[in-house]
Length: 461
Image (cartoon, rainbow, N blue to C red; front, side, top):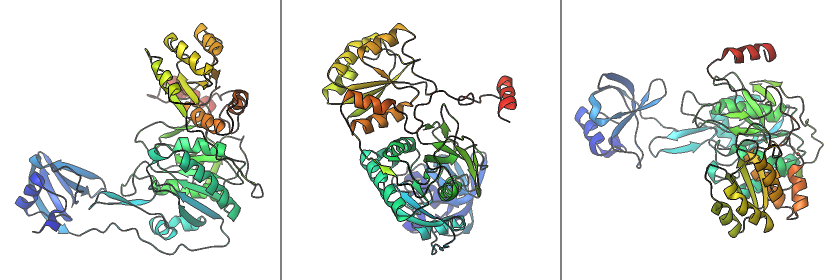
């Protein structure tokens, strides 16, 4: 057999394949210590280890079997796979609304190239139609790729560009905007766009996927279908995140951009609304509103685009025994604003007091949030909070720490005057600060506790 038949395998794994006459793309029965696996031998990327043979199981999932545990491999078939994105012309229907999908690099519809280990994104209208044909039943889709980066590389440059391009697409007549985005920092982008793009005429929907499209449990297609439906038909003209609600495929939730956070590293229902209710549920062809207080669609309205941002802003989470040199370093390096995620009602230890005093005296804008995520800053309850108020720390209500971070950058991008910045920060623009939290804004379902079940039956069902 030639090297092509061992694609990516070397060392012990290649020796095993040679011993049993197994080929890459062979449909095999593989015997290991006490287990039998049925699947297709996949090629390995150049950066993969030399210890495991990888199978695509008939269920659609992948499994790696260590070379030392393989006792036999029997080939029962062979079919070389081509992981190409099917492409057909996206049909246009003038009776349907126009939706624009702006791409940032998130692979909302994609296939994995097992030869190189690279993800092949589906992004053109034709590719998306080939991957998710249901989209043509919803809207006329236009796509524009703005960036091709991982979500952790998103930052002020990308946020400003997105804000400006959203304005351009609404000016062209788009009924709504969908933004394909990696999930890890999606809540930061949703928050800053809530400030940079005000009074949008239609929905702005960020969408991503927790699991790639080659996996049977992928949420990519369902999320994309629901996001495009929201952009096309929802009456909610705000910045939203559209991702799985429950762990099943039952519906997606629409989360307000300033009250949403990624809460789990891998589950599909990772995004949660904090200290508020989600705006709505969305399933194919159906949107059910949950929150009644939202900005409604008005396609005659002109969005106000204000893509300002000061990059010298930091978010610092307090921890026990934290020293003031962290604050000092930010000040010495020219940072103009600091958001603190404090404990409890908004506290830090007294070791930080001198450094915080110095920061405020040198003109640094210091705001306090709570690392509990739910609840408000209340700095008049205990002595620690009152001392911090005397030092010039400003409480930020129930703003989430990440939201306060991007809002302070946005505020300082417009003014350095303390009173003007304070006015911007403490004026709720997109429900980032609320007067009160709803009774069902904090529910943690753990273990099916009887009192929780009883509460839900009495209030929510």
